[in-house]
Length: 320
Image 1 (cartoon, rainbow, N blue to C red):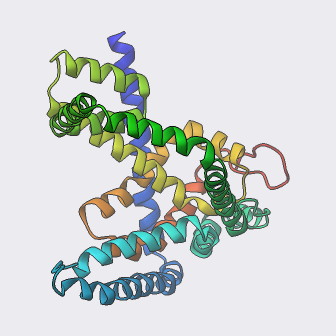
Image 2 (cartoon, rainbow, N blue to C red; image 1 turned 180 degrees about the vertical axis):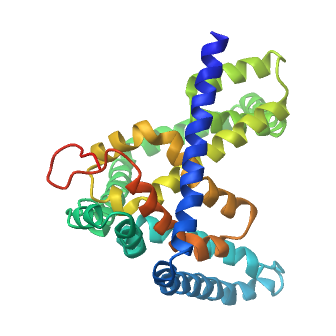
């Protein structure tokens, strides 16, 4: 069993490493070709300008917070961080077709036939679909609020009666206060490990449960749990970044097709998105915006190496 586990770990490491190498080689491919990286410059400039303008627009009203009695200072750098992350999220989520120019140019440099075939595929999950999903979520939220308001005559008396019962029983208030104090103490004591286990749960619920049990039994310390949690968080974010870079491909697939395409490549996609996570984590989001278009070009090179790729004729897959 130990040999099988080691073999699985080696295979997983090899997949992540292959995705990381694919990212590095794709970036090098784009930078070695002036026509490709020149295509990156306008959008990169636009992204930086949008992030800077948004940060300044937020910073000017925040100057009022420095006046008494508040006296709170909001740093411009923190607003630049927030605005950069917002611009990156908006570019990836709300306007995925924006990255198609460099992506398809790099893909055409590898295989013009594949680039033409993929570019001719219909967009099934573009900006319209994203906005429809957001509007649907907003309507659902408003509907729930309206339902709660319309049924207030049922649940408000029950809530008032419950509050009155608590107010009439000082002992219950003391018990409730003691519970709150204990809960606050437990939260302050266990928050780091609980947060780490929560991150692990995003990858594997069973592993999170086993690790939590081992931690409670004293078999592993809190620092080890936090380290595993950070690794899992790194995996989740790297996978998300890797998938976002392939948005020109994903928007031409249904949700089911995209899930099936990503499933056997999850570790490779995590390795492909690892440099984006590292840039956002250890450098500055503005640097991430500068490199984002180059990385979209690298995604075109990465897609060209994948077998199979989307079949625009409506079949499931096609080998290249």
